[in-house]
Image (cartoon, one colour):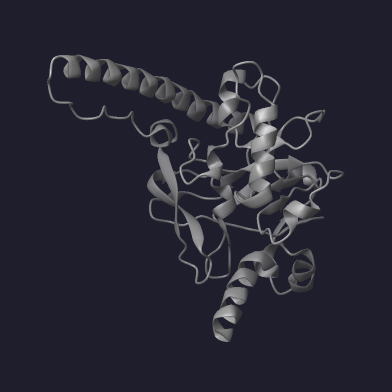
Length: 285
């Protein structure tokens, strides 16, 4: 029993320590080979924001078309079912769904699977297609907190709080109080019939397949980083009908700042079967 408890604690600590600031500070020198360093915060971008926007718009438009196509299929199937019942025919097969939106629009597909790293738990893999260098590969979902906003209760035993260079925090935990906060803020921010954020990342089947960035594991000397985090502020011109696929929401309704998102961008070409590894440490000089 004691060994089981110790083993469980060790596994949780290995997952959490990379986000525990005192541990990071004490181990920076040991992790110097895997550190990501930039000269200043404003230069921490691998690709322009415009390219990130174009990638998201391309995917979200396909998701929207697929969404409406599925609705049409469901209505057609219901109509066909009623006709068959009234004519005493047998019910046919379910309608087929559309093509994989991610593979169709971006040329690759990612998914969560058990990590290749011991005790790392879940990881993110490229399962199909090919990821070119500089592509937006994933998004880090969650509630966005400004530096002055309270997050103490949400951060307790929470290894999914991401800290941006300007001290903005993103809580990517899909359980407990973090989950309740996100759903509450998402419901609050509706604009008429338009949903302004995507809550499906809180489930095992996110409708935005990019919204799994919180499961990308930290790199090591043996497994160097092949993606990096990049902060991205959603522009005001982003179409309102496509915001339903953004997996982020502001904690405060009256926030005057653009919605902060964090995307993961590929550092090199990545082929199917590879696991994604980011760098949890970025040093700004």
